[in-house]
Length: 441
Image (cartoon, rainbow, N blue to C red; front, side, top):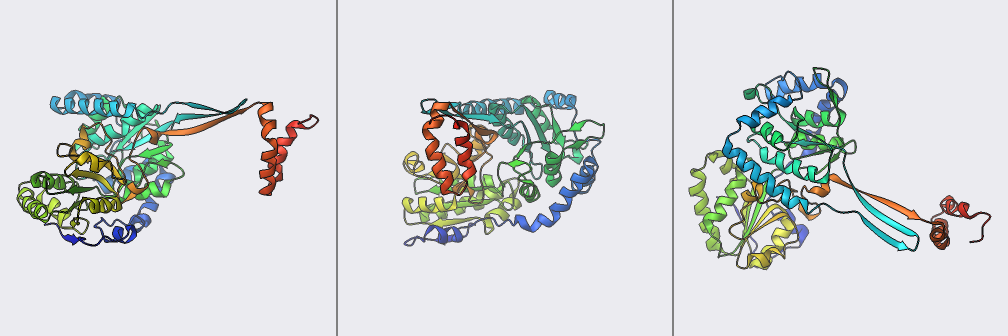
């Protein structure tokens, strides 16, 4: 089922290798012309435009944007107890893992009388996007809200598309998850118009203010991504999320049934989802292929999964050994990387590029999607070579405090003046010497 690329006996350099590996092709710029008028309309007409787009794209026209707080409480009260217990466990684990990410203020005494303090200040207001397409994502509400809360963000708004089946409100489980997290501001708006409304703000149909945010985080479709790109600068963003992807580095010790199940689990998201197996064992590759044929036929979303697995973004890469496999997965820089090899923990420590690494046979990606404690909002499309997933740090800004007394400044004055003259910026130096006119340095 998976197409094969044979790299045994040859290993191209990183740039060539990246071009050879399967990857979902998503051209965000190709939809920019469709997104631009949506952004402009929301900027100019506010909520009226948002409701027009909801009717056009979502098939429903909500009465207003903000979901009443009592509706959030009602959905939480009516939530299936089993789902509630699972969400509570997920929240507890994610909160526990993220609590240790919070940085503390650091004061460095550079010289006597001169200090630099590094403060970490949370973003004031954040918009958190939870998609609502082929699946329902209360887990994404958890993954966005918890690190923002741990960071100390004072004002949060969750956005999720209105659902015709639910009276123009987001899916009830998304509303319940928000309520469980203590978030009382949820907007029924999706797509590029959600990002635009978060950036510009507006006035709801009942006259209530919808305040703009400073930052937008969370995954979405190509139109959400294009809007985030277009509005970046007016708002901060976490990343430009693309289709989900999994890479599995496995050797002959791996269980082919496990490998196949994990490849399928990500293919279930989307027909563009990428599932990539990297192995030095032809026998394992053959066994995984047989398992895929068997397991895909038994899944709920058979056609979606088959389309993803047989697409050009998925495949099997044959390599000479695990060391070569590490070079391949580092070049691929997967959103999710599983290591299913002998001595998996040692192999995982050698990985440089991945959004998250799942080690051994009992740490599948789906564990990280929900209850590992890690965050599942991760870099896609090879961006793990230079970017990190969502964390507490995403919502913090470093602010430096510089404090020097007179003696400390005078001791370094000549150096500052020399550098200012070297850069032909004499007024920079004069800003130093002006403080000591009439005194002996």
